Length: 88
Length: 226
Image 1 (cartoon, helix red, strand yellow):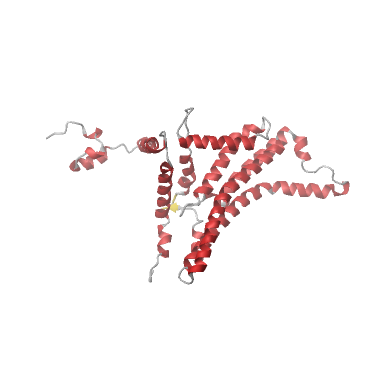
Image 2 (cartoon, chains in turn brown, purple; image 1 turned 90 degrees about the vertical axis):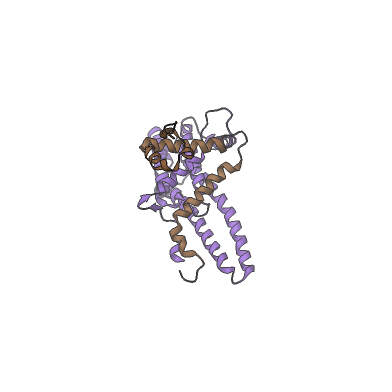
């Protein structure tokens, strides 16, 4: 059965597994495309959690939690030595 | 332990790429702008705080000094947010690096002094001699005032660096001590833990106070020179 909607315009969850490599290759990887992706992501988060009538602390704390997690990943190499093990 | 204590102050580099740029730029994400009159709670709170701070800090200046409002307000926001973000676990604080603080202090101080010399030359030069000094003391006092003038940018930078670095170091050390003491004697560990809590509260205060002091001093240097 042929796809009715062209592959390029489908969202990720509607792409079938066999079509996945060609879908990834069709994405826009130019600098302006990547910048556009970051911008879209930022506004998606902002409009869902912060730019609402009764925004709560969750909008800010999720960002800070992600920041802490990324910093942990960054310094994992040094932190590895501080685990409670008999032999390091 | 000795090597570990200072590794948290090294500039983060991932595969040779400067990650520190991203970390320095990160606080800008936390200050969204809004063109609306009535915006969301987050933006409203920030605008209210900014208005409070700018009124308190810029009211002493004349109209020429008040052109520096944008600069000083961004300065206090940047230093305050960077210091507060540095209190999160595992994070890197750019203001612990002397290079960055010098990069903030020297241009601002130089700008204030040069503005004073260009626009009010006599008054700027008169700052080198306090009023009412006995005549024999004048040469020595001019030398002392010159030294105190040139030490201002160094003091600004080193004050901020030393305060934030010292606070972070203390937290590391006392936290490590609490952890080590837990297996030896729980009561001492509890006491040390209380000290840690108090220290963390102090650090929150210091983070904001240092930002305030830095900006206040720059504004004072500006006031002298406009």
